[in-house]
Length: 288
Image 1 (cartoon, rainbow, N blue to C red):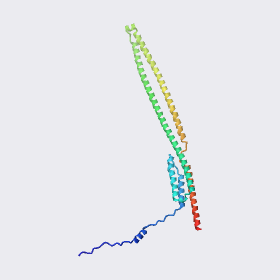
Image 2 (image 1 turned 90 degrees about the horizontal axis):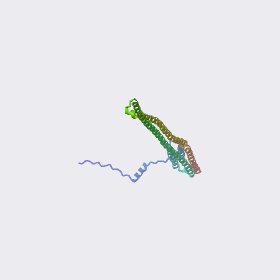
Image 3 (image 1 turned 180 degrees about the vertical axis):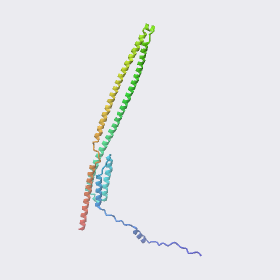
Image 4 (image 1 turned 45 degrees about the vertical axis):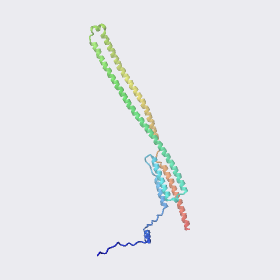
């Protein structure tokens, strides 16, 4: 005989009422927190105070200005979204005026910084070019004088060799007994005179070469000093321009930003104060 078969446990079907009650029991009710206007105002004032005292150390300051303006706008937007009842016409007018003046002032600082930066870059570029020209002049002068001296030494060496050979030839003529034909035609005397004249000419050329060399070197020196003087003059003028550009005030505009944040803080304080007074007046009327 077959044993008893155990069936699946029977699940009781829930009614619609039971399901509805279960859903309602699972809902978590979250009580919205009470907005504290005083706390919101205090937070905004602290943030504006922090922004008003924020320092920027390294240029370009224009990049810091853009980021800083974005932070200020974000703080004001947070205040207006968290406490919209405080945003009245007087608040808007004050904020718009302050922000407009702030943008103009920072834009002027930015334009000045860009102008000065561009001018400095241009002056530094010209300085580098003239300094390179000065180095080139020095190298060229050194090369030319070296080449002139080398050619002069070669010329002197050649003349000295020719003079030495003529001296030897003259001595040979003097110590050589002339032949009968040479005595008859005076060839020995002619050769001696010719050699002596050539020797004298070479010695004169040696002296003239030395004088010509000194004149050439002096001319090159004067030409070099003249060119170098012009370049030095340009370099001096450019360095003066660079120093003058450093006198132009370029800073992080802390005074402007601090004053603007003080105005913004005052606008927040005044608008929230008006709101608090309206709320207190409403409460008093309600109690009556």
